[in-house]
Length: 198
Image 1 (cartoon, rainbow, N blue to C red):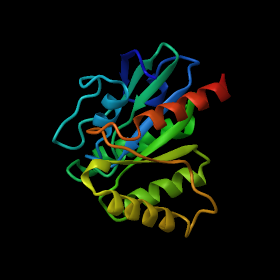
Image 2: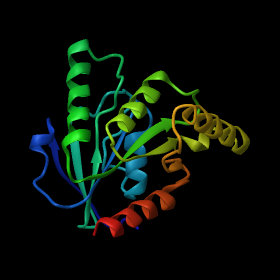
Image 3: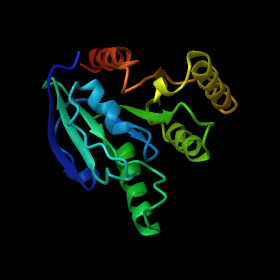
């Protein structure tokens, strides 16, 4: 259970991130996937991460201290179409450097909008994580936007698509920032990983 969440710092590069030994759990996804809303739901604070109707709002690596015990990290979205080529490349480099070189990173949560078919950009990013040995889990967002049957079908279709290239799947969660679906499961998973790395 998250009882305290405090903004710490926004960093332009992994080398500028906090000099801390606390475990980190980072959240990432395509622009407008509902990342800030999910973070705010998990932390029971609607104003913690800045939400916006405009995609591409998060352009830095944002650290939040949770319960004084671990860091939640809000990473920039990838594939932001409105950004110029130069900015897209800079964000890609920032994200890759964080994933590869941040020793405190325990798990990266890759957010996927449950309403859509598997997107090439998401699949490519997940493949890149696998190739580079970055531990990750998949979090489907906006679970309230579909009926239960359709939601289950979409999630299963995504798993089937991944199993074409993966021998086994990472942990998969289904969430909704609106209804708080999956919030407890996600927090419990982080707590179980914290217990392992303690």
